[in-house]
Image 1 (cartoon, helix red, strand yellow):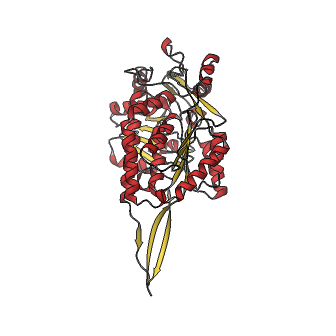
Image 2: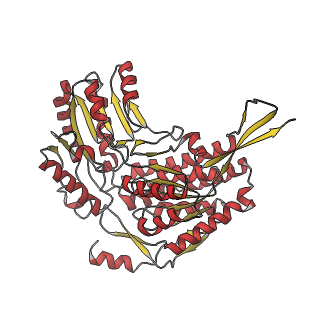
Image 3: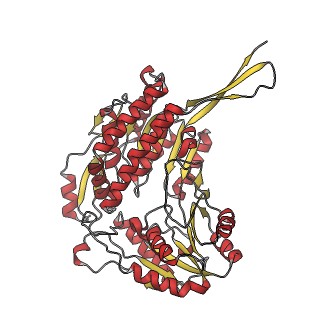
Length: 491
């Protein structure tokens, strides 16, 4: 941000944060958000300090104990979540534009994610009302039953790439499970979370049940993770931060859900439907400017078709239209921050020094209309050693590393040669091969003849350094509860 735009941001009154149903504008610290499509300031936001984190957690603890939340019957809690979903549905366009202005995703994708957030709250409203406890088979003269109870205060920490989606995936099941939530959105994208907090109050959620604290990870995030009143932590973000959170949580014996980085293999066998595979491979890495934990950033193509497939994919990538996110026809928006674009550029430069062959991209666009934004062209690189930095490290940008393979054993060895294990994609007409390879891949989500097909009803999470635990599905609600077994003697 240049001096003029920084001054313009400084002149704004800060948007308030939410604690115990009250909007607090004077927090003692602020954040300035920037529109990555234009480089211009969006808004100034009140930022949470350690003192405000303490205040928010204590308000959440009190809210979790109050009868107006603690004693709600499941259908009553479900009714509140459904009302919140109604409020969100009525404001899909507004929240989609908030996300677009914060992180630069094209408007069509933001709208889809805003609608997905609504669906997530509806799903967990239904789950809240219909999930059952269990009675174990008796092994004596007693009756054994298990109930599921909330932890109390859940810290939900979300990333900047898909905030509407991530916030719904954490807040909805945590509330459905009966917890109170302190939500800390990324300092890059706080607007959608603040809108969610406002709509929650409008829907009638009791004060303190959902608190929203924009702030930095170093200040607000660290204070939240370390707070003794937080009984569970759910985090989506980078692996380095995830490890630090796991260490702190481990020292306090606090359960965590960690959805971390990925370096997902996208595999094309010689018998694949190449036309379909080509479009999905491109979408799997270039949609959202590659800023996705499940981006198919390592392309493995059987050697017999490698050159031809790579040539067609390169031609396709060159047709992808970069543009302002709300302009019709734009297929790819900017990178979310200037600093992250510089990181991507540095990683690509290292790949070229390592012997990588650039087939397309590896530069900022020449279009004068995009110069003020943080744009980067779709990039395809081949010729790298599978152990090189670009083939191993998460770029989190529109950069595809293409690698040939000879046979299944070669493929599986290369695909699993990663510290990550979040997702994978397979393209083949041979169903037996698809099953065999999918079972051999070390990944929490495997797509077969599709990619990035997600469902709120299907558990999601990673192997290895891609995380701990699962979100989504009915098990995603149980993850925010602890079980209590009770045995009744009948003698």
